[in-house]
Length: 524
Image (cartoon, rainbow, N blue to C red):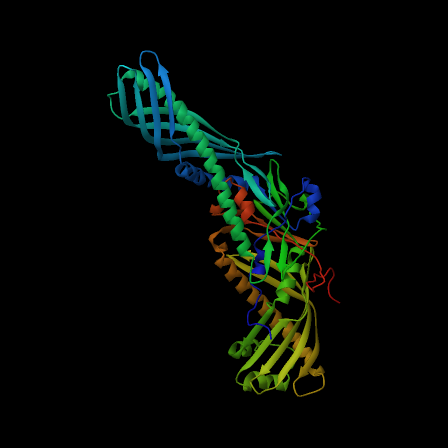
């Protein structure tokens, strides 16, 4: 008996998220298109918006960097050997002026952070002298600085995932003034420390800041990758995450190509015949997610085989649904079941794997067969039937809620039987057909809207302000387009790396000998 959970949970969150997978990346993007089930395109205006958050990550890099101690010695005429140690370097009063971003075609991303003001504080231990005299002291110091920071992250394929290399990093010091605490040190010693320590601190700051930025980028990217994996996992159903080739960068957008493998019962989907081409997307909006139909069919197959595509309605809720005006007369035994049995219950579940196909003209067409049972109390009769349905669905997202708009194109009823009778109930076919069209389909779509929106909110989608979203169908694919995705806080580091990792993509189409079969054509 099917479980009392409908609609399919996180596996259908792909309506508003994208995920992908592969274990190896091709060098040529054009060759990788046929393996690509989903694409993320981030245009330059979106890069500018995300860059506004970059300063927070830079601040974190400065504040969390741990600067190593420096020790050494220097020989001076008449003075002898001067030994020194620089310890406990900490940063205070950090502020950042502004940040600018540029897309470098075929290279990477250029980030210019200007007017970084900070005060570094620490301690100097020093000693000097000769065979005649030896002096040892410890003194606190403070360094005022003003720095410009430049980073050129390069996006690449690292073990099948989008990765960032931020080692191309430089610091330009406009100001670096050393202040020793106290006035007891001789002038020659102050000058020595000012000249030498200023140079030493420059090297230490540059090395640690650039290292920390690279570290933070990888930590956040891995965190978002893990969250994306959890986001699209449910029970025994999962999605392997990765990319088919390294991201492509030009002056107008950054684009990443993803391939997702639905995993279920030790089987994995594959894809080798994608129809994607970059010309299918425009540059009019900030963010695009292109998704192939091959994303959904294996996931729906797994949901069907896992018993997730089912719905139970009972009691007053069921009775109220049948108050809908229908042109067909309600058979007497159904009326008695709904009104007099006291505890009617309707159970509906998928009895064949639904098939999804998207076209430019109708949106997404879904073919499927649902089995239904109307239970008339614990001792009453049971009406069983199958509904073969073809429906065109268009999806939208507004006010942080998913909307599904369905138009049935074909419905017919078969195998309608009443327990205790050995004959088909041909007289109820037309009533059931109209009930499926005007009651069943709207109820299923409404349940899907509510459940998927709830799960999206649980994953934090409602924390984002998404402006003017569109879901645009194409032949065997569709894409989401957003004018503005705001509050993209996690997408700050390296600006783009996390955004690719957060909005991942999935796809798949395969068959195997164990029955995990993904149809290549709609059911008869």
